Image (cartoon, rainbow, N blue to C red; front, top):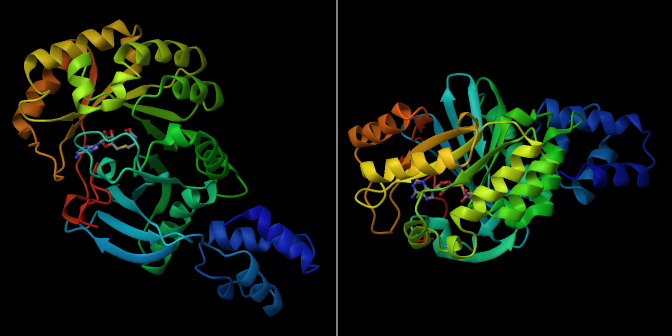
Length: 343
Ligand code: SAH
């Protein structure tokens, strides 16, 4: 939904300005799935809008419902027939979160990530990014799922800070009280760690949560897992975080996917402690340990008991650390599994 386009179409059709408010309320508060359903609008306006300002820029190809009943994954087709995936998660009974994509594919080729295997195809527009949220709100209404979708994480396909302008515009639209009205604190953007982008993001969006995909606290190991580390090292990330924290005093999340025998030894945990301490303000960082979700890459997940031991080392050192709930694996909708190479 491009609200500006809707406004122009209504103007062309010589509708009074309050018609825009009726459309807005129906779309963003009632989550109607088509203009047809907005019965307060005269038929010719509904038809004119359907022709010239499509309600969604994405079309449902399929929705998979996870065994756990707490996750759903949608495959969405874009206007050029490319596909992206997006996930709806229910971490607690009435709380819903969506994990959205910002690019078709991804240029960064992290060793453990299925999206990275596709390579980069194209950026998503701001509208295509936001429409994933609108799609899920409409889906929830059609399926009569209880509760509201008010949390959004940019942790699907793609690298948000490499599509900065469109992501920034999408964030403004999601936060716009006249549109999605999602609070900044309910949004998180995750990055592979692009230093320039991190600084810019802090200046532009100090209230939005930032997550950095760290995954290793030692340069050589991180470069093996995340080729981007050769250009944007741990050291540079640390420097950019210092500048980021001038603008934002929000807690920064450090994501760390535990790969058995690769980055999950006690020495790795100690290295992580040292890195976080080196960032200054250790209280402003929160380590999110993620159990590896299967992709075609030759990694195994660290067993949960060992993940807990790794966590304990961080806690004993005074860091904040949690092991992230793993939802969506039964539908290949967990972190790192979106669009795998067999598609
Ligand atoms: N490009 C951004 C956004 C992707 S977020 C970024 O790198 O942060 C997806 C998160 O899941 C990232 O932290 C990513 O590193 C992690 N991830 C990727 N593959 C994974 C896998 N197979 N298992 C668990 N987490 C994975």
